[in-house]
Figure (cartoon, rainbow, N blue to C red):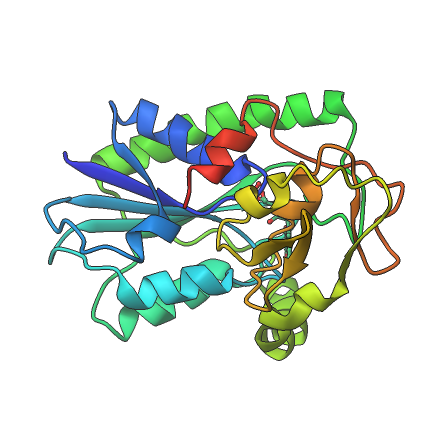
Length: 261
Ligand SMILES: Cc1cc2nc3c(=O)[nH]c(=O)nc-3n(C[C@H](O)[C@H](O)[C@H](O)COP(=O)(O)O)c2cc1C
């Protein structure tokens, strides 16, 4: 089986899942969505996975774009893997709908619980709890790899159905179009050392430096990479992130995230 796993990741959860899955699948290719969107695609893969974080109970906008763009060989096994802090909403269903319009079948949609990274609402969970989630993630990835090897068609994992549907309708359906401009809420405090890491880790090049300090360009994915990777926690979002513990996957580096571009 020739397999490729595409990913989009701000704080490393989705990248770690993509790497672990690739390892279980005997060295499948791991490739960033951000780069794939700019290139012609190799259509020789017979298994394709896409790993992404759930945003507002739906899909990151860049994943929507990618699903409209990706080239898939007829008959290939195509699956999605969502990483999430609590509930998947309708992320897989939305992916399925977009693909269906292009006559591509989503064979399976897996959901993997990971530490949440939405600092405007909550700080990072304690390290011991994170470790438990990482152990569960390893087991879950083994199961997913088994399904992929057997090319099984599986019901998409979006339970409980009604709550996920309601949250999706309330938040994503209504709010997703405001995401590109949501960076107007970011600001920096006096701790900024002008190191420029925020500009490098932004997966979609939405930050430019002016006299060493970040300026956001209003093409944001709202992924929080800039805020999470700032080494001195100078980047804040509105009034809700000061003093909240930041989150980054402990086995993923800033270079891994900058490598997406
Ligand atoms: C803008 C935003 C919205 C999010 N919305 C959800 C959500 O609706 N449901 C959920 O379970 N987690 C949500 N999360 C948490 C992430 O999906 C989760 O932490 C994910 O694993 C992060 O992946 P990454 O480290 O690869 O970026 C959200 C995070 C962000 C930044």
